Image (tube, rainbow, N blue to C red; front, side, top):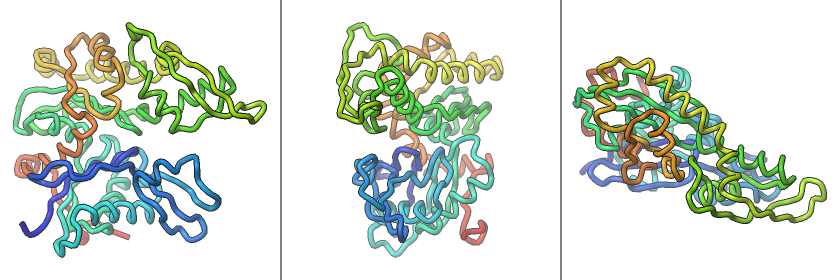
Length: 342
């Protein structure tokens, strides 16, 4: 093997890289900590992620790629280069890269992302929509003519699509996802208890007692932070029912978007989908009861594949193997000469 072909899921919360015939080789938070005075990166990945909310003076922690769009070009290039070098090590051959993008990303956003990947060390880049990658990663054959409904709930966006024969018939993307849930929990605790907590604390609460449907067995956890009025340390006991009610408006947005997508789908594809099951992927697929919520709302069976948060990167790997099929639908690799890079 003279080089690597990489499948990259450039998520808001994490970056996942797979290698053809090797599978997932890297999974790291897509965060960087940098010195504000000279824009020098100090930490990348897990260490930067855990530093958020604990930054020393003159140090900032950011996500250079948010909702599939580059928010800081220089730091995005450095971050992606760091992760790619961890995978390809000292190989003299530049890799081909298939990377995921949200379904509604603009041409400018896509060109910028391709530029980041090429400047980070890619030889050529092909961008494929996240729900399509999710379907491939969940086991859908790109050559299968039947219809499939895929919902990928990540950190920054929820991407959903009806897929048939390696292409998307209907698409929908909303910016309601895992990060929105965290922000809702932060706001709820501040409004009801006057308790100020960080996003990492809110994320922990979501994972520990969060739910998309009411739980049969009630549980609770302690939230620790700072009192908004006195500025002193404070802790409160919160229940799963409180968090369910807090997240319900966000969950309703996802359900309503899925219903609207179904209404736009042709009767024959709907028949294909209802004879099988809806595929639910992304990190938020693991939220307690998410599959039951969507199943009840759409009257359809819902399947969560193994490791749903890795499906997009796995799908990028599948796409690399079956580019001959995807070529028919306009997917192709772009080189530095074909794309204006910075």
